[in-house]
Image 1 (cartoon, rainbow, N blue to C red):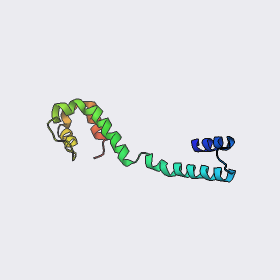
Image 2 (image 1 turned 60 degrees about the vertical axis):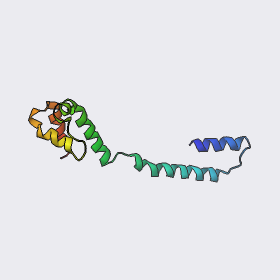
Image 3 (image 1 turned 180 degrees about the vertical axis):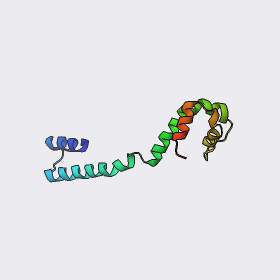
Image 4 (image 1 turned 135 degrees about the vertical axis):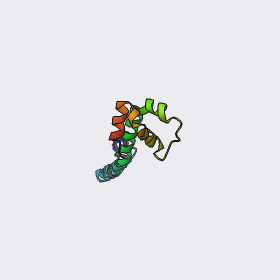
Length: 102
């Protein structure tokens, strides 16, 4: 849209001569570029997983520090540690852990 406004302004000032067909073509190209780019930024399954991980992290931070601080991160080791202490976890952490995909 900014491109179209800029081109129209240039045309009015005599700095650039452009037909309506050319402006319409540029508008169509810009719209197509936006429509192609939108699926690239729409949340995917990985983004949903990150949301679950964030909720788990928020709910379980105190339990993580208490039971799993020495556990090396990665490969699901933290979640496995929390599951091993499931009976000792705070209710919010236990609930978040149950909601997380297994």
